[in-house]
Image (cartoon, rainbow, N blue to C red; front, side):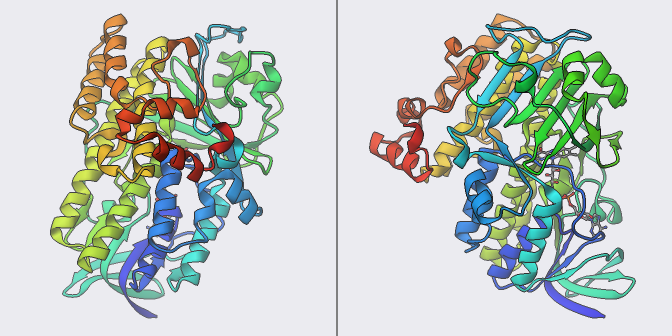
Length: 500
Ligand SMILES: Cc1cc2nc3c(=O)[nH]c(=O)nc-3n(C[C@H](O)[C@H](O)[C@H](O)COP(=O)(O)OP(=O)(O)OC[C@H]3O[C@@H](n4cnc5c(N)ncnc54)[C@H](O)[C@@H]3O)c2cc1C
């Protein structure tokens, strides 16, 4: 079989299929080539407010009304009850000492709870990827993309018209190739793009599976005050000296759980649980229903992310760590940028691709630096919490600015292109990586956050439990350059009104 297309997209995970949909809306012919077959297990499940907003922006700009419901828990459940999903109301961080039981903690010294939504209907989600990725691939096919599953590309050669991709039973000629095959993926290996050394992140590994029978934390530890949202309806993070464990609960009875570990922490699930008695209790009746996956080298950066007629999506260009659920927003930003380049240039120009690569690497750098500093403070939880507020400040400010139609206020993921926040947050992370601890660096974090705080993050009386409150946003109107009626309009549009 011989096929010809404007664009060949390698990999029909969520990113490849979503880009295929967008490109079909732009009138491009697309061949989507997938080595495996849907439905298939995939890791990377927890969305964020910014990821959901980027999904909404894509749906609105490229007329994808069937995708838009996936941007909120309530609309997702109403539109697609058959697609596996979990409710994510925020980020829950709990700190555990080696061998220590959990103790009541009225000052929340071992907790950080940051809500991302004021009520369930507009909550974020965990994507059950076997369902979601199959749905998106089917949508791409309905939009006219050719989807080749079970197709392993064995060769690639450049031709005057673009690229020729060869598999056992098919040859595809395409003017442009997008790699959405994930870290250490096809083009990275085939073109020998080289790895970019990590500047800040220590070597890390991951160990994960899907489980059934995982107990709810709030059933095990009742009466710990009135948290801003149910602690389990979140990305629940158990943090300890050697790394952290995630617990993401789907509504279908399954739970995704795994660990991001420093290199010298043994990747032994039962051993980890034994050292963390409270977490062990949460998994006392749990059973893994998929094989454990061990990634001995979790993080990855490709030295190059584009060429004359190809680009790697951010998820193929690098993976840092799931600690802050950064994979989806980084990838969605990349999809937006590539889509804009196709829109502007026909086929992305050298200039657009160079800008795309520069943004991708800068955003992966900013993510790497912050996550590395967080790994360095896992044993200093007060500083870990304060430092992570840099992420929450940047994310909530970016969301508010974009929702107000002022994206220029929030340039770059984590505001990394912002004239003050970018360099300030970089310098803070580097100082922490150089070993700085104590009140001075905490005060520096507070000063960096203050001009961008739209979520009451500077209010210490909240004792590290942060609800989403309309009055915090209204109080930040000058930071956003917005009037009160504008902010009320934003809250109304977002379905926030129940909380005003
Ligand atoms: C342990 C872990 C946890 C994570 N958790 C989160 C999280 O909670 N939140 C978040 O935002 N991000 C998370 N991420 C990042 C997230 O996984 C990625 O951003 C996301 O999976 C990217 O999706 P994708 O469709 O680009 O790639 P993938 O989901 O990796 O899909 C790639 C597809 O390409 C196919 N493929 C591979 N090679 C070939 C080939 N040669 N030819 C054709 N097809 C090929 C594969 O079969 C697969 O279907 C996590 C990452 C890891 C490693």
